Each structure stands twice: as C-alpha cells, then as structure tokens.
Length: 349
Image (cartoon, rainbow, N blue to C red; front, side):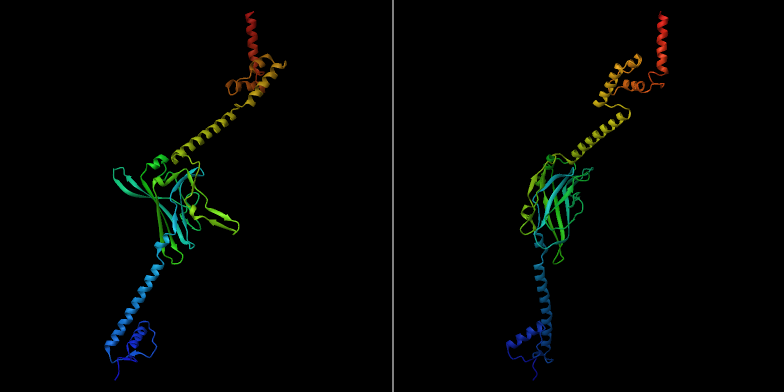
C-alpha cells in the first residue's frame, strides 16, 4: 500500500504538511505521491493561493505605512497672507513650513487666483484660474525651495498681477480665492505628495509683515526655530494704496526731480546764477565801479547791476569785461555814441 502523502499519521501531520507547502519549507519527510491526482491538484492550488496572499499582505502593509496623505499633514501654511512693501514695491506674502525632520525633495510652490471673469463679449467664466508668479527670492522669483525651516513665499504685485490696481478697500470688496500648493517627493519612499491651502480676501492683511521665528540658542550653540510663530505678524509702514497708485506717485516725483535738474543745468549754461552768492558778487562789482573815479561816467551808467536772471544782466557783462572789444562800453560803439552826443550838443547851441 502506497499512501497519497508519506509520513502522514494524523491531523497534526496533515497541518504541518500544509504549512510546509505554503511557505516552501520542505523538511523532506512528508511529500505527496503519484498515487493520488487529487492530492497533487490540491497542493498546487494551495501554493498559488499562498503566493497571492503574501503579495497582497505585503502591499497593504507597505501602502499603510507610507501613505502620502499623512505626510501632507506635516506641511503647514500660515493662516493669513500679508501685503507689504519691499524695496519700494508691494508684495503678497505667505509662509509655508515642514514640521517633520525628514525633508521634502524637489519642493516647489504654486499659487492660483480663482475668481469670476467676464469677457468682452459678455461671457461669464466662473472659477477662472489665473496663475500667480510666486517664489522664495526677494524679487518673487524661483518657485523651488529648500524647506529646512519655514520660508516666506512672495508674489510681486506688478503690471502683470491681477492685484495691480486693488487698494485695501477694493481688496475687501473683491470676491476671489488664492489657492497655494506645495509639491515635493518624500525622502524615505520617493512618493510625490502635495499640500494645499487657500486665502480669502478677508484673510489678506494689508500693511503687515511676518515676524522672525529663528533665534540663536547660546547654550546649545544652535539656531532654534519656533514653528508656533509661523502665523505671527507685525504692522509696518506699507502705504494703504494700490501698487498702481504707488508707481504713479514715484513717476511724478522722478519727473519733477528731473525737470528741476535740467532747468538748473540750462540756467548754469547761459550764466544765470540765481543763488545769493552771485547776487552779492554783482552788487560788490557795481559798488566798486561807483567808487572808482577812473571809470568813465558812461561805463558807470551802462554797468548798473540788473536783477539776477534778467536779460539786462547779460548785456552789461560785455562792457565790464571787454575794454577794447567791439562789444565793450569803451570800444568803437561806445566812442560812436559819445561822438553823436557831442554833435547833438553843439547843434543845439
């Protein structure tokens, strides 16, 4: 007699043979024989089912331990955004930080403004998404960031921004939502994760900036980061007007300063010095001519100092400088005028 399974004495022996078959242990004492085809088919089915169960269990456990959704809970955004002034330009700022010790690889930030838009033809586009240029640099560029500590992300409010002509009052009366996202790869698994947040008009604070949250611990000799202060803001002197209005005021100041500079240069080129020193020099020259008896009376008469900046002052200068020139008061023109005056006197006698 040849049994279907060798060394199978009771239920315990059959159970051990089933475990050895499913986990491919193979101790060598128990095995199936060619006498029972049913036993061979049952052994193959158990082997296939065992492999499927192991694969499913491994996938479920791995996916449970490395869920990207739980990773997004460790990425925090500030509860409010702020509008502040940097280097004479208005910026929309918000903060984002990673509170876990593991890093996010290739993290980058995006922002979109969602609002209703009406076209020139009267078409209503609801929930229109407009991309905002955001970045972690001072000028609002470079959307990639290294989240070693909470960083401040900025959007430059320029001519291409939808916030260009919005004042603080217009901002509160607007109806939009700014959706911000941070995407990155988890360091341990390589899976991509995305964290999202949004800001409504009443969550945008005008005239504030984010406070510092990094301090130096002298005893430990390291920098300490207070992640609880990610929402802390302080007021500043940001003008409460739109970026468009701020730019117009700056242009007016620059144009007026340029006009004054050009006008001063033109007056200096023609010799019209309007300062007090020039007036004083002209008066001193006139007084010295009046006290000098060697100067002819005609020269004194034509050398009366005119008001600074007038045309008569320009005509009096050649007579003071040219003693023998044709344009001077002692030149041929002056002698001609004196001769005509003498002839007229004799004719009257």
